[in-house]
Length: 212
Length: 212
DNA sequence: AGATCTATTCTTGTTGAACAATCCATGCTA
DNA sequence: TAGCATGGATTGTTCAACAAGAATAGATCT
Image (cartoon, rainbow over all chains, first blue to last red; front, side, top):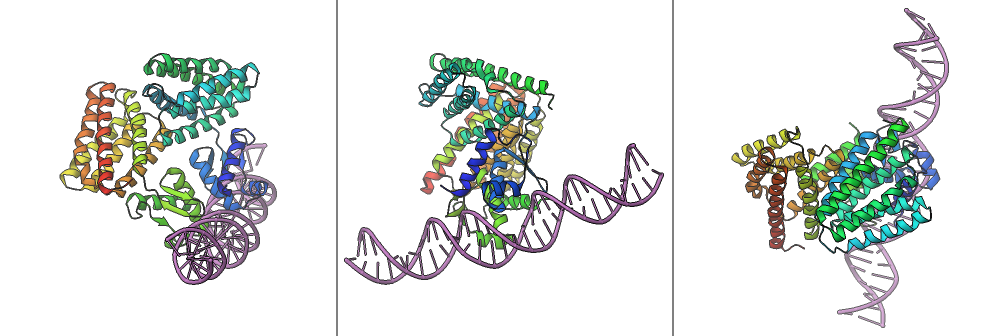
């Protein structure tokens, strides 16, 4: 495996795991030492993460973990509505990607029963990635994946703990059922309602946390 | 202006201007010398362009200008349909971004009358960027902008010369009229038809050029 | 005290040289 | 001709150094 690509992956993992908290400054010297790479190599990885929206780069002030504010969250949900709903509404019947949705929902049920909420959160991301996979567009999946990862940082910032996702396992199930048994339009509408509720929950958490 | 950002802009300009042809290998040593920057600085810019999809990076084989094949083109138009149509269909009436659409169409008419087809092509991009601006989502605009830039490379690759855009000036006008005077649904349908025709034209050019 | 200016210090931005790792083309061998 | 060594070129990565901008602390003034 390529070193640089692996470095990006390592950084990404620690970002979405919350080890590098939103807003935290990422010192080049410190991180370079920690990952045992040179500053130059680290900076290349920073540029990649910057384009993906996971870190923020201000010239001469360095790189910090992205720390989405409320308008960022609103923006992210706008993207989700446009992409997820459009994909679902235009998805063909019996798309093989639906199997991925089903597996995610099923595993989420199991994980929820076992109180493994971290896993539920991960599977929630898998589900919505699977939804977008119905588009058969690798570019759409890439862009969407970046946005979803950024949303993960928003969750971490206001400590929307994963167990709050509990009610949404059922909602994903509803979306899947609507796709399988009803019309695409119905499925998209169900998903749209889901996104509205989800967005409200996150913004509520922001308000409680007193964050912008 | 930041040096690095300026370097990315310079490279982007030359890419979409066609000076660096699709598929062309970008030698680090040669480009570093040409832009009078070090290899390390250039490599940072390469990572940014790579994430944007404008260049292709294969480990140990270097960077080359993205050279979209037919499946890339199909993928790009999938993205366009999902994003542009969704945005237009859900756009509020009297969105200020419509002014940007109007300006682009008007200027395109003028440029077409003057046979300035390069400018027509640029204004066409402006129009569709303006469409997406109706979403009020900076992330959607960024992602969409990257995809449009990549499509520009596809045009360059098969030499879809800009004068072929001529009939599409009128199509953009129709989309705008539909948005202003008819329903969002109607506007989205008009745009969908436009995209279908546009995609066919590009794929036809690929077939003629014998490209994959 | 509070505000403002200044000097020092720290971090990032960028460079050049160096070497390792990998790929590519050439020519050799069977 | 197919496969295989070999040498040359390019990329991957590091390091040390310095320039440039930002942040901090201290001094000065009101």
